[in-house]
Image (cartoon, rainbow, N blue to C red; front, side):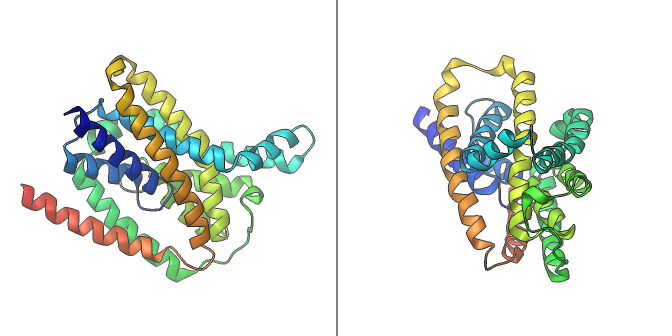
Amino acid sequence: MADSTLIHALVLGVVEGLTEFLPISSTGHLILAGWLLGFSGPPGKVFEVAIQLGAIVAVCILYFRRLWRVAAALPTSAAARRFVLALFLGFLPAMVLGALFHSFIKGVLFSPWVVVTTLVLGGIAILLIERRRPTVRIERAEDTPPTTALAVGFCQALAMVPGVSRSGATILGGVLLGLERRAAAEFSFFLAIPTMLAATVYDLYKNRALLAGDDLLTIAVGFLAALVTAMLVVEGLLRWLQRHTFEVFGWYRIVVGLVMAGVLALSG
């Protein structure tokens, strides 16, 4: 049983790392994967928080130099201060709405049927946005204007519904608002740091009574799997965007959503 639990933790950590920064919904995939595996390791929310933390650390490692340059320039650079303001404004809608609706979302919307529905609808949205091909106005993530960042933040708030995809909402929202694809992806990665860190701290505090020493190995396996996998995915996605669009992810969401709807229907 213990070996099985560690294998499940490894699988779910890889799933988190693969999906957190792609526009395909990590939460949705974790719900579906956990349902398929019958995962019975550490309490679900605690384990999910731990592997999300692994994904956050991956971004911090990959972008450490750029983040450090911004932090070091804050006292003297108006551009650095504007970028920090943009990240704060992008984070603000999720912070406020998450605090208001956290319990409802976790208690009511975290179900496989909600996920398969939003996967399909999100896939259709990606295909429509890519066919529109919005005009590019912003070439670098650090040049995102505060008003644009706030609008991306409201897009991010939509991702509180499982299956919508935080990365998908922020990246495609950024593209619609004039960010170049790579810039939109990188702004999404930067925005993930305060957003996911705040959600992690909040969830750990709410579920602190569920933490147990016996679960630490399982959590560590999932955390490390998510960290390593997320680092590979972020670098791979940026290379992909040099020559491709997001359409493949739209089709992927639609296919996975329809297949899983069939599996759910057959399972009764």
